[in-house]
Length: 165
Image (tube, rainbow, N blue to C red; front, side):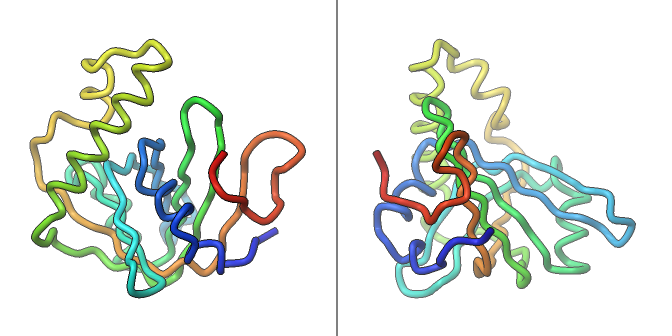
């Protein structure tokens, strides 16, 4: 059940998507075999309905090929401590080079994700291994969400998203 997309224009939701959440990016090829990679940051457009998710290109080659082929993407944002989860889907994904300011967004995300996992007892070395050491080409996946699915476990699952708690 897709919730109302208007929730994405709420600054609280934009803050959630760009905070220290776990980001998983998924695609599917013509063979219907799914591909998954880890996102290393997100930038929500304040002027329009689209957003960009950053991935390490070398770790994401097959997924990026899928997106170039069919443009379908699903991205899951999950808060490590609470498991609050939103899934966004889009059908117009494009792969883009980074622009000025993106490196700062990625570093801010890495710091926030490191802090979120540190609160759960995971050290910085674990997070660096999980997110990559910062080497290698990073690209942005831009898409316009066409569906949002709240997936937080519990009685609120599949209801329209609420602001952060």
